[in-house]
Image (cartoon, rainbow, N blue to C red; front, side, top):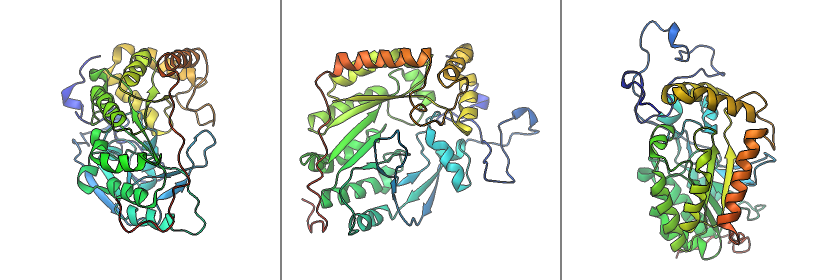
Length: 354
């Protein structure tokens, strides 16, 4: 890896481009720098946009996803992970999937009230809700706004099951609520660990906690008797696939109960962003990484076919899955997450949280 040119690289951001938005007729983009007469981008600062949402709990209908409902208090994510599949959704808001996604954050401030209204619906039967399924509910702005914490208070009040996935150590702030939920088997937490290589993490996931910090989070959650697993995702051939055994062993040693994985896929604008990022940060292995990603998706870097899009196919995908299966069998044998408790749900909530 080489250090990208400081003159044309936004340190602390994953994307380095403003990509085109397929929903806009007129816009300026920076995808083709050879066509620009002058510099059109400056290092972006984070902006917050407050939305008065009408609903926050969404049913997930994708047949290859196990969760049935998700709740996202934020759209866009300051973590800036270059590969993030959620980037394309920012275009629905009129923004770019590139720099806008990680610098223009949409905040659903009324999410707690909407969640409570949803749980009070007469037809609702307790089903695990994933917080979040799209962007990270513990991204930096959560430290100030505490929307996720307020949502957890609602889940605890109504004794409703909730799943969480995050890259941020801020989850430990809410240890009190998570322990309260865990005592009734109402919570599962997954910590996303993509790499333990700090040089890679700093450019691939620039505003996230370090890999070692995430392992520490796993350990602290496990010691607090909160069911915790990891997601070793996405696996990117030529960048992090060789870390699978090391990451799974470290996660198991720190108390994780299970591990999952997905193969990288670069749908929509993400392909343009990732290609630019890869050329700037890993020019010596660009061809290897790019070609192997294509090999896993039938000659393309993207794949939208259910059942195949997150697992890939072909020789390289098979090798990755075999390495993961063997590592999980070795380090997680006999471990599993407890079943969610669906019987504790209190439709009327409770006057006192504790």
